[in-house]
Length: 486
Ligand code: BES
Ligand code: ZN
Ligand code: ZN
Image (cartoon, rainbow, N blue to C red; front, side, top):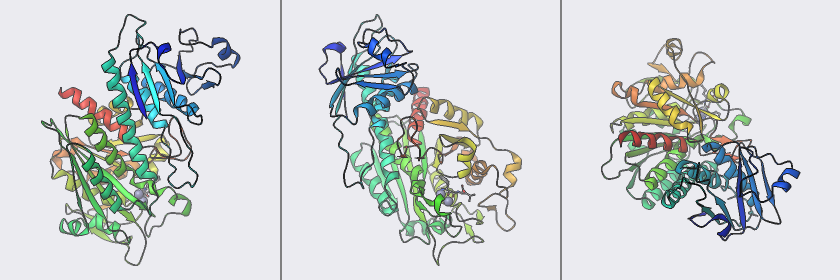
């Protein structure tokens, strides 16, 4: 999609269709040319309400407010009305008196996110004709907005949504086609395309050498070899080092603690944490954020077979902690613990892991929200506040000493599941915390994205399939960090 900013007044911009946002149910704005028709259609102008008037090719979309998330929703609605038509171009005016860089960027994000459509495996693909959106900064008020600000908003909005869309594409790809080796290829491709990004990847021999027995155990029954992918974005004069670790389970059958067949469907999305890492690296490189950012992905399948790891096995992780396996379906934490230990060798200022780690998180928070876990409530809050602006929903989850005790093992240092069926998102976080060294305790966050990672019933601007969870919330977090450091 192409986004073009212009100083020309809206009515002078040449395009086929015109998008008008009805904000605060106000039908009296000069851009509203069809007040009577809209009233006859009983168009109120609330969120997710929209109409395409076929004669004038005006698209009216409702917008409860000019808050960023309402703008994303309005843009997505506008796109969905244009999508099935043969219209190639549209224009939209910026309410210059009240709009900022962030609001224009949010509108573009919504438009671009809505344009994502996964149809790789369809014989007959739906043709979309829409190509260009003109954004007019008509200066009809005393407050003006610089054209260059609008241009930056268009560019950045597109970059952020494209990063989420890249992550969606990876996640939506079926498990037979997106194996750990594909993760490796995709990461190297990104490094080749992006400035200041390099990639190293490692196979099972490296994992053995590094004593990542926990990660290796999960891979054992898979015909696809594992990969540890390590991307680095390193701009000149980086101010901090932030390390992301992503769970990249290209398939989670549950292993010998096999999932019931209905729960197994969608487990191609168990690579969402790793896919978010790819999206984040693409976005930070294109946005040229002033940090050194690492993206580490633990990629493997969790399968069954004669050589599968078993409930009752005891695994020795990279940092020497012994883990009693009681359930092979709690495999994500077994991959992450070794990757997190590896990550700490690179001395992060912040260490953030992302994973579709627990069904319990979905039960606790609902399918729309990710959990923010960690040892520092302050850092959890900080992340929460930043993530709010991104349009992704998050909630901090806190631990307590009673839950801490539930992952004790009689025979090993720790058990991979808790002895209670309650609080599973938190006990998974407690398990991971056992692998965080003292000096990084308060610098670490664990994001459980199991709920929003895969959308079975479309909501907001998220279509069926992957949502790209984790990408946008981390971009806003990093942007806020950059502002603090400026
Ligand atoms: N990948 C799943 C978690 C999951 C569930 C993600 C639903 C997305 C949607 C994870 O590996 C898993 O199976 N966790 C178990 C842990 C349990 C055995 C302690 C779970 O949540 O049931
Ligand atoms: Zn599992
Ligand atoms: Zn899993």
